[in-house]
Length: 190
Image (cartoon, rainbow, N blue to C red; front, side):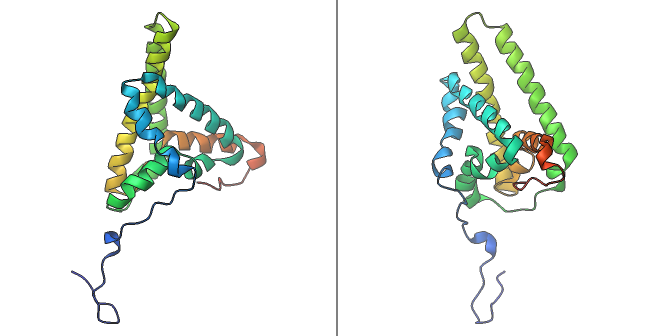
């Protein structure tokens, strides 16, 4: 049921307006990395190694800038802004998803799976090419699984619901707190 505004016209509930994506110039193009790695990596697993470069960059960068990567450079953030925002239900994000303990569990699970799968890739490989393919596939499957989760929680709750418990964002926040120059300062991007 619609309410009437002061001028007698029916008001349309806010959730029926398609919201414009909040992406910067870089993110307008970086979102393509998500389907490229998640789907293209199934046929060419070495695409997953692009994630290794991104992870190294943002983990070093986070020591100085905290979660700057998340809001300004993250391809998955741009992907959900562009493709999930228009179809999101904009429900309330459950407090559990943003709790410190849930985020810690997600990081532990993520790092355990990553470590075990990386170890298996190296142990079962005989050539350098085989190692690169198998290790790339580890990154591809992690990207694919986390993207599916991001899409599901993005549609059900809020486009950036994944960002509240993203393991990389949690790790970035922890690295930022290690910088003694940031002692007592809150991460400006969190």
